[in-house]
Image 1 (cartoon, rainbow, N blue to C red):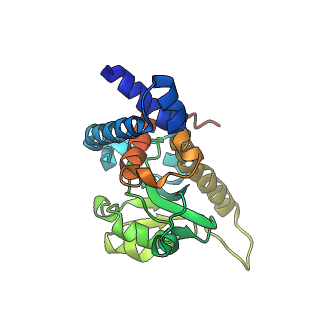
Image 2 (image 1 turned 120 degrees about the vertical axis):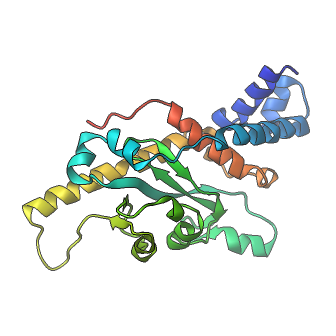
Length: 247
């Protein structure tokens, strides 16, 4: 087939989420051919997109930072969050236990995504087995060496990574939760602002998962290429246009 048809086949599989049998019928080829084309294009795009320097400098982060971030969180370098994708259940008990997520109550793969305050994906970790903790994935993913002293990192309150960030001179930004006393007016405004601003990473993850291959569990036949497909989707989400921060 022409290369453009090969790429169309890959796009149908990843972006549209069509099953291999349906694509094979449409192109009048075997399922094995569809699988081979998907893996080949996943690897090719991974080499091209994976070579892009998506981590941006502190100066670039500040110059593109929305006004609301500048007011409440002027030193935020990246917003971190973990997300999980469903995985087809393996027949091997060892793999079942490693990929089982108690949070999702099924087999999953888990990845860490870093987003700049302007909404760009600037960090994508490999996918790990679903049982890994948020702290451990931050420790081994490779995001810590990218940070510089004085950087602020925004994350959910369950990210217990203060000590990891302190080792590189960075600081964790979460709302100032209190239990015994009321918020002051300033703390109330700051808490609401941080909560709203942190939503940007959830919206970015929503864009990544708008590639419909993630609508159903990833088949084990793609386990060797799922990292490549995941990074491709994350980087391509940067080309879907800017977010409206006034919302």
